[in-house]
Amino acid sequence: MVVLCGCGVTVSLMHTLVAPLLPEISHTMNLSQDAAAWLLTVTMLAGAVCAPVCGRLGDMVGKRRMLAVALAIMSVGSLLGALSWSFGSLLGARLLQGAAFGVLPLGISILKDELPEDRVMAGTATMSSTLGVGGAIGMPLAGVIAQALDWHAVFWAATAVSLLALALVLVFVPESPVRSGGRFDVLGALGLGAGLVTLLLAVSQGGAWGWGSPATIGLFAGSAVVLSLWAVHQLRVRQPLVDLRTSTRPVVLLTNTATVLVGVGMFASFMLTPLTLQASTATGHGFGVSVMVAGLCMVPMGLGMLFFSPLSAKLSARRGAHVTLLVGALVMVVGNVAQALRPGNIPLLMVVLMVLSIGTALCFSAMPTLIMAWVPATETASANSLNSLLRTIGTSTCAAVGGTFLAAYTIRVDGEVVPAAGGFSVTYWMAAAASLAAAGLALAVTAVIRRSARTTAEETDAVTTTADLAVQ
Image 1 (tube, one colour):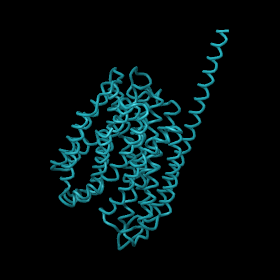
Image 2: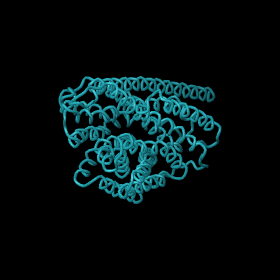
Image 3: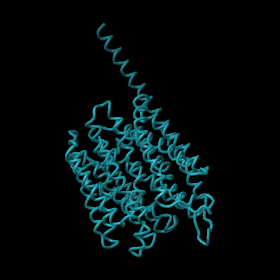
């Protein structure tokens, strides 16, 4: 469990370590801000495509094997980044690093197969929390290394960590005995990849291109057509990439929908808090601290997710994962409303971040538990991968819409146009609304589970009564 959680932290680090390096990389390579942002976008696109593929292959040929392959690809990408000589080579490096996005769902599925039943919830909760831990410590860690050396050193450090994670997996992680076998759906993988890339490109670039631009509308329309055709193919093929019949079971469908909303509710603070901390005090909402201090202020949010994950496991064990999801979503509502009301000082802001970390930890631990309880044992990796993919769609949507709000609400400070407080507040209100909607879906999950339990009890009573009559 320690090794797999370490892999989770490592992979989440890869998604955030470039963010504080973009200004230096832009200056060194003479890039525009929009061009440099592709170093984040391409990783997200690669992860979105590779996660379901790794999940399906993990169910078929072995989860540990695919975990090792994903970590090896990430190591190659990190090494290429350390040796990069141009923007193209660096873009390729980030593409390869994104291929490891499937590590988290694969790790959760291995824990489900290998841990004793009474430890599965705790393991799942801890593994899920690593996403927040890596995301919170990635920015300050990369900033420290880049200030002491240069941005290449960050990729050298990523290479060393990736290789260490790969070695530890090969030594300590057993291969899961649960496999589905069968043939890989190549056409389904290509269709899903095309649909996701067009969708996420439209979501991530819509603000820059214009939401009404032909490119954005065309990508949204193309994505809708491709994903519709892909869904038809998945329902017809004998061994689909994603079993849509399983995915449309009420609990699974409601949980996956809630995952998108939780991604929106969580990511608002990850995206906006560093900007608020670094904004000039002349804006009326900023604190004027350095990138380093802003990153350090985010660390408690990640650590809070790690520390509170055992609490979420205990709550799930006693009351059910659906209750944990409900409580977590409501806590996130409180945290986002507090953010919208703009905490007046950094200590208060860090308290609000801790509240959000508690809610996020509860939600992240509950969702995989709910998914794995309602899908066949041979499909846990692919089901968790789909859940992780939907979380990415949620965070990408939050980033795109939040960026649009920041661009719409601006003020001029010292001759420079900067985001105004209104853009931040509207984004946090959006995140609070998404969290509240997730709580509503959690209530619906609760109703479905209780109705299913009643039906099962009634059927059991009927069978018992029939048996008693037969005996008489």
